[in-house]
Length: 87
Image (cartoon, rainbow, N blue to C red; front, side):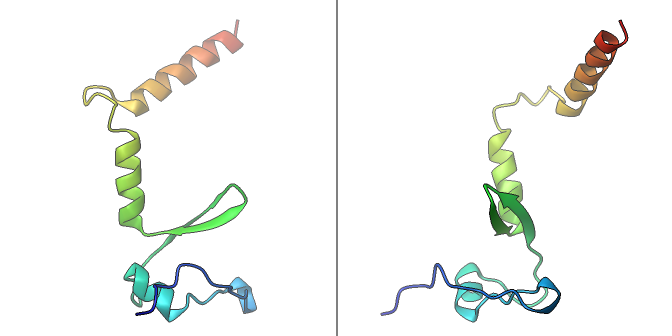
């Protein structure tokens, strides 16, 4: 039995395009029309399924109490910083 492909070399083609080999697409359950989120992390290109990204973010913020609204916290912090700068 062959092991699933976890790594391969890709070439950057015209207009910066890359082709994800069939074995990798199959291992990830990717089909034509799927969307991936691309980001740079530690000088690496990371492609991630949107559902995986949402799961990862929910996990990261799971410890934040439901009554805390992070957007409100950020706005309040920005206002405090602005007041300090204007003094």
